[in-house]
Image (cartoon, rainbow, N blue to C red; front, side, top):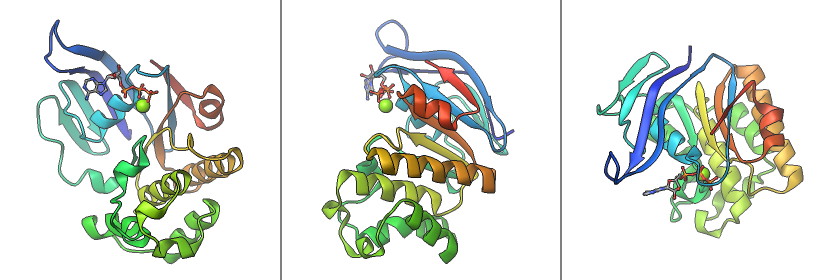
Length: 216
Ligand SMILES: Nc1ncnc2c1ncn2[C@@H]1O[C@H](COP(=O)(O)OP(=O)(O)OP(=O)(O)O)[C@@H](O)[C@H]1O
Ligand SMILES: [Mg+2]
């Protein structure tokens, strides 16, 4: 089991009647190599769920077994877990420091978590995402939206995580690059048995990549 969420809940603001209740008693499981698609209309809480899973927002109710670690409500996010999880936020600009050179932004997880660089992995990611190597010399702030989104995907993959949390990872890309990127993610799932939680509002995209679907 890669992830097992039991009765998790989240409310923005005050818990109780005054707060903005997003989800409650939510339970789901993710096995090794599986892709769980999260589908639902805008504002239903998909991004909130991923933020709770990555510790950007606190876990208020329930518990989550992630990889080998138990994360319980109202406790600190487990140390060392982020090293094994790749997170691509919906707004990729949030994952990338605009003042960094693209190369530094890409390599940042290796520096933070003391990972090692594999040239072959890097080349494959860049090739598939159709990111030119020359782009690495530019500042993040000089990249287009689609380039930032692809760099954020590359950044999340660089540590070869066991679990990928993807929040609308292809929504800002051209249809052709969208298809290529989905193929890359699919290849990663097949080759490395990487488990993924894949958020999208696009039923077709979800159907292409997911083994099972959670509807909000
Ligand atoms: N920091 C916050 N404080 C209060 N309410 C918030 C906050 N962030 C989000 N919300 C609200 O919580 C709800 C869920 O937001 P969330 O971003 O998780 O939705 P989503 O399903 O990802 O939507 P989209 O498909 O548009 O990305 C929305 O109604 C949103 O307005
Ligand atoms: Mg969202």
